[in-house]
Length: 241
Image 1: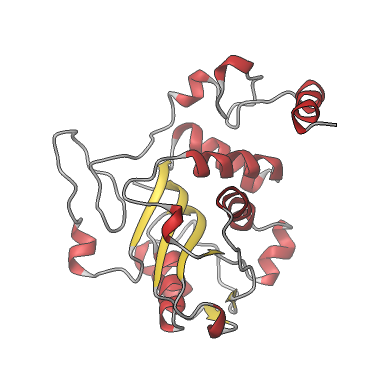
Image 2: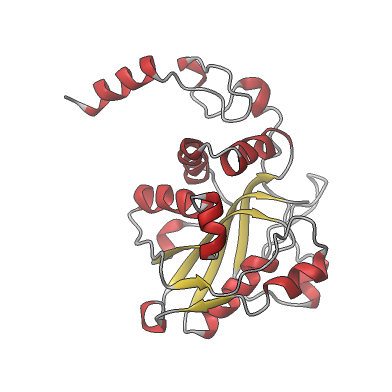
């Protein structure tokens, strides 16, 4: 049976719904979100910091390094996100991550795959790595949201995905209620590389769901670079601004 026929049957049995509010989507909408929720997504474009990707207010402003990147160059080459961590995107991520709507991860992964990230091309990279969870946290949640997203990207762009090379070796408290300095201290030394030869000389895309202060992805990028990666770029669904 052709894939298009199977997809049509699936849409009848499991009609597509908005990733944020859950309302049924009309075929003509051609989106992962209904029109109302789409309007509630703060998609990130220029102007932004060319390094960490934080957006700036004002369409008449050029791209320029933010204060944080001027003071301290991050271990990653660039970080990009689809949208601001608020509105409909926040709602969709919370449904995916905390309500165990794993299927939503496929939808959100396609959103990442379709998004025109500024100054970024998947073709320039050779490996995908997802930010890992500690085994204890993985047992609690039953899935790693970053892995779900990374698998969609790997399939879309025919890139290898290594789920074992980067490991979270220390169990840490959830970052959600911690300040910037506390987050940095909380993840320091938490990640290790299991086999440096698998990443040596590689240009890596590091995938996570949300960039908040950047402490987690910076620690991951630092470990990957120290172990021989040529470059690490960070892609996330959302960015706290």
